[in-house]
Image 1 (tube, one colour):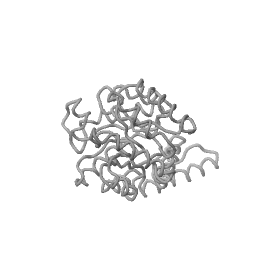
Image 2 (cartoon, rainbow, N blue to C red):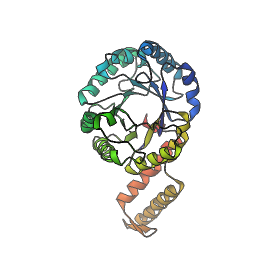
Image 3 (cartoon, one colour):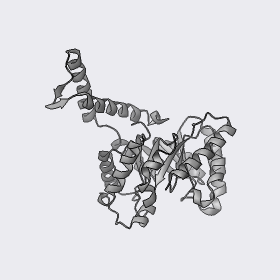
Image 4 (cartoon, one colour):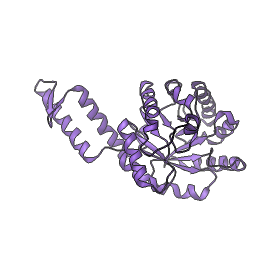
Length: 298
C-alpha cells in the first residue's frame, strides 16, 4: 500500500513554480513535459527538467510526465530525464501493453548509459482513454517497472471526451472505470492506484468528496494541480486515528488469542481471524508509509 498520497503537477518550463513546489508538502512532484507545456517550450522544458533532476539527489520523490509515444517527442523526453534523482516516468495516454514494454526498453538503455542500476526508474501508466481502461490489466502486467497506475478521471479530460459522460464531483459516472482500473491493477500485482486530477481549484468541498469516494474504493493517492489541494489529499489518503486505534486493538487481541491456542477472537463485537488481521497489518503499514511521505514505494 506504500506510495505517494499527493503528486503535484508542475509545468516543466516554469522554473519559478519548480522552485516553490517542494514547499507544498506534496509526497511527490510531477515535472510535466506534456499538456501544460506549449510546443514551442518543449525543448526548454526538457533542459530544465534535466538540470532539476540532477540537482535533486534523493531530496524529493520526482516523477516526470512525458509526452505520449504517438507524439514523436517521447525519446527526446527520456533522453533528457533518465538520470539519478528520477523516481518514475508518468506515461501519458497509455493504451496498450506494447507501449509500456517499449518505454521499458528505452528507459533501460538510458539507465545503462547513465550507470544506473537496472530498474531504477519506475513507470506509472496514466489510463486516459477507453482503450487504456479496457487494457488496464495487460498494461499493469507489462513490465516490472510498473508499480503504480493512474486513472485519468479529470473533468473535461481525454477520458470524458472519449466516453462522453457528464462529469460530477460525486463520480457516479466513472465508478465502473475506477473500479475496473483498481481491480486490474491489483490482479496484476500493482498495489498503488492513483486517481486523476480535480480541476476545480477553489472547490475544497468537492475535492474532499472526490478523495473520500476513491479512498473508499481502495485508491491510495491523487494527483494535484495546485498546492492548495495537497493538504486535503494528504489528510484523506491515510488511515484515521479511529481506524488505527481499531486495527491496533485487532492485532493485539488476535495475537493474544493465538498465544492461548485460538485462531479467532472478537473486537467490538466483530469476529477477527487471520484475514482480518492481515487487513489490519496492511493498514498499519500504510499509515507508516504515509507518515514517511509515501517514500515506501521506492
